[in-house]
Picture 1 (cartoon, rainbow, N blue to C red):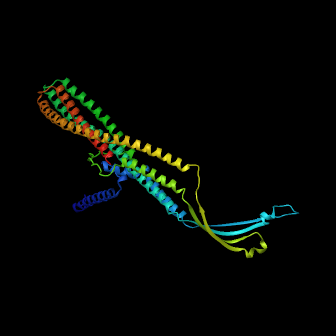
Picture 2 (picture 1 turned 90 degrees about the horizontal axis):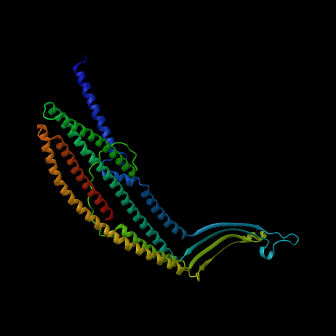
Picture 3 (picture 1 turned 90 degrees about the vertical axis):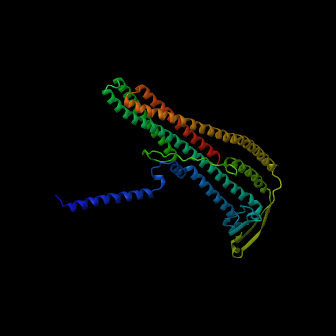
Length: 428
């Protein structure tokens, strides 16, 4: 046998080792990003869904591309430098060949050229404004897509949580029925209840176990679908926390849904200005320098330079400008019709959701009162079972009625959260 001091030292060492290992593991888990931890609340799932959504990343890439388009426009206004060269010999043999008056016998050139547009500020302003509006359109679409994603995830979270609530209450009833089975078995042995009563409890208990197993499968399915929407590859079973969903207030500024129609109107108006710039005069300055000759014998004398200004003025285009504006008029008319119809639906949708919310909250108050009565009845029957003063069928019926009321309350609570989620979506 070892010494008592040695055994005590080994015991303390093992305990310290376990505590330190657990502490290190907890610290590592705390340091993990949300995306690879087990998600248990709605906020975690929303965060992961936003982080992993390829659509939201695509919008970010589109905005970056528009920034590059702006740089491309600016780059096109800077001097453009190019180099060119030509070596062409047109011989005349025995009087046969190209006309020397045209070809000069050949051409030999090596030039460096530069050109740049000038005085084009009025042409550029609508183009930059168009890019800015495109940025706003993409930002607005990204916001709407974010809200779409958040609503889908929240509604699926509520589906999964509803399954969990149903599973939890049925598990509680299963536990209660197991306790009552033991009590009834004892009372049967004492002659208080008949053996048929014990069989009734046993059959009800078996049916309740089947229900719990089915609800577990349904919860696992809903949880898997929630992770699927968020892009999470995980099969671990977690118990979701109760969602914290609060009703938002209506923004004083325009809704993102109505803002999209305003941006469309601005885009159409700016397109008119872009079309108008096609009929403005364009001015470019240019210059070149190098060798340009038709005779190799005097090539050393033909190094030089040239420079100047070019002007282009549109005069007639076959009424294209008028036709383009007529197309824009039709687009604006369609936009106004869509906006008017959507605005009516928008306000009707919000009014309907507020009405549903008030009705659901009234239902919750009414069902809560009924649940209190049901719980009181179940508690009384539970005491009577222990003394054999209530029929087993009546007690089992009380359990089923209590489950029905509890499920009704859970469904009303879930419905309230669903309505708030829909309202919050439209109130953005």
